[in-house]
Length: 108
Image (cartoon, rainbow, N blue to C red; front, side, top):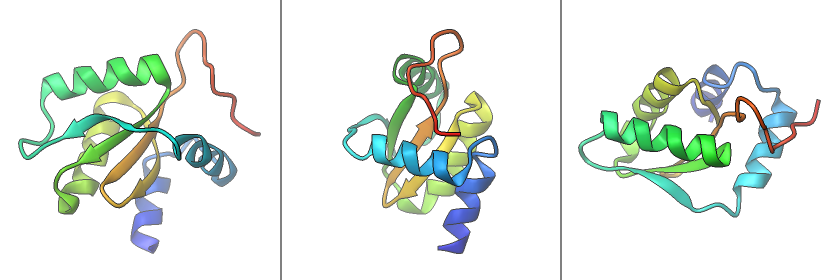
């Protein structure tokens, strides 16, 4: 649990615990829109991720290989700047506010 928590905290340095909880509650009902398969991260996958996060601000990513979760989360964060709000099972929940018209308001 501590290792998971430190990964989430490390990949969402701009979010407080209260904000992460808020995002987790919003993300609970979401279906994954990006799937990371056996081939891992590709430039096409990153383009798809960026398009989805721009459109929705909060998205779930399903990872095929559970033992690659940390690497996938790190690569997506590094490539896009999206914040990791949650890691549970084979799902990652990422948040990145829209640059011009953010729709999700975070608690302070």
